[in-house]
Amino acid sequence: MDVSAFYALFSATCFTLVGLWWNVVQSHDDWMREPALRRVVGGVYLSFLLPALMGLFAQVGGTEQPQIWRAAFFALSVVGCGSTLRLLARTRGDFVIIWQQAAATLLYALIAVVGAFPELVRPAGLRPIQAEALMLIALIVLGHTLVWRFMAGEGRPGKDVPED
Image (cartoon, rainbow, N blue to C red; front, side, top):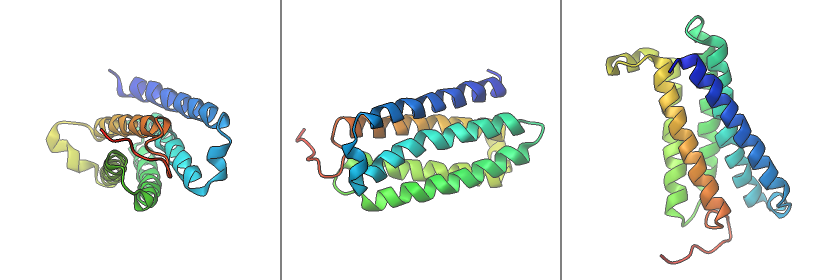
């Protein structure tokens, strides 16, 4: 697949997920009243918004002006890493959520590193923008894990985790 076509589809899909998430949030006013829930809702929002924005910058910069997407990926990954670390610091007891947030933090850090030092992925036989695409796919999968746990009630603060 052409990388430009991938990022066009990827970005549109992520923005659709942002919109779907906001539709879910609108039907749950109580989620925005509690600070702990509001943070998690915002974390889910960012898990789709930041990759969507990265996809847009990848389209704008492409292979002709890689400094555009590299700078954007670096900056947006720093935001993602920081916000995910803040959520991770407040997460207690749910191993799946802790694992998801730790993995997302690691992916954001790797995305930032590849943005800053794209030559690191060349030995793997990938173009840097392809390596970033693979990591963004993984971020979206992790975002879906977060949504599933949250919607099932298991990832919400104050909810008991059922015994397996």
